[in-house]
Amino acid sequence: MRKYLYFILCLSLLSFGCDKKEVLPTASFTYDGESNSTLKVGTNDERMLINHSQNGQSYLWDFGDGRTSEEKDVVLFYPKSGTYEVKLTVTSIDGVKSESRKQVVVLDRVLKKIIIEQIQWITHKQEGLSFRWPTTSQADVFFQIQQYTNAEMEPLGIYPSCPVIYTSPVIKDVNQLTYDPIEIPVEEKIIIGKIRNSNYGYYAIPENLNQVYLYSLMAKDKAGDTFSLYHNGGGGNAIRIEKEDIEQNIYIVDFSQLSRIRLVCEYE
Image 1 (cartoon, rainbow, N blue to C red):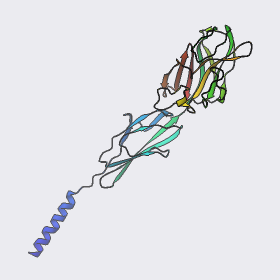
Image 2 (image 1 turned 180 degrees about the vertical axis):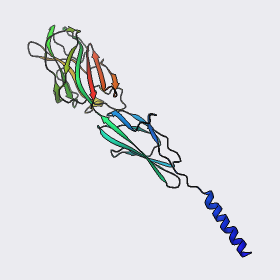
Image 3 (image 1 turned 120 degrees about the vertical axis):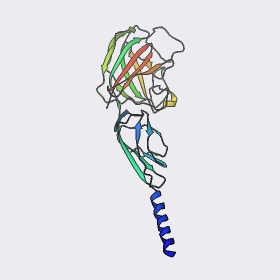
Image 4 (image 1 turned 60 degrees about the vertical axis):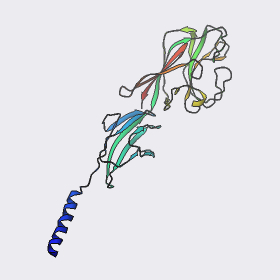
């Protein structure tokens, strides 16, 4: 009888051991639904990482730049250019882990060309404008980029406290109504940034202080006085991203308010 009970006990233990199967997790994710092993994006571009893992109890994302997340699905972005590895670690209820890794190449938008599509200014005084224009029908014109570190203007449209990082060659004797495009190649490396989660990402307004550049179309008259024909801190601006295609290596920002300027960039 004792041998019989021992046999039944062993059989029960064996049966219990066979029934308990270890559930293994499988880590898997895609970028916005695409399963490419490498993703190319511009700085501060946002991509949704979709978690397709199976049998996971918990998740840990490592973005390769010191940031991590324990959310199931996450929004991916990088403020700085470089090559990063995204790693997803999935842990099952039994503590078993599985990993999936993908590479992200983050590129800067580098200014290659300034196209002044049209130039307009009014020679008589206009009330309510954030610009001060020449009183003559001709002036020398140039394009200027400054670091937007101070919102004070003196005189109107001129930001004397903002450091200048780029000044284009001067175009002589430009008419106040010019509709023939003027192209200016840019030899220096000027990186055109992008602010996340902002409808005003290229506006030189106080909330963007120290985050954007100040873009100005400048004019100088025969007397040597300098004026701002356009700047992206003025009211009534229309600023839009005209084209954004990393595969075709093109990024264009369009600025307009009477005068119109396009900044043509490539990804590097």
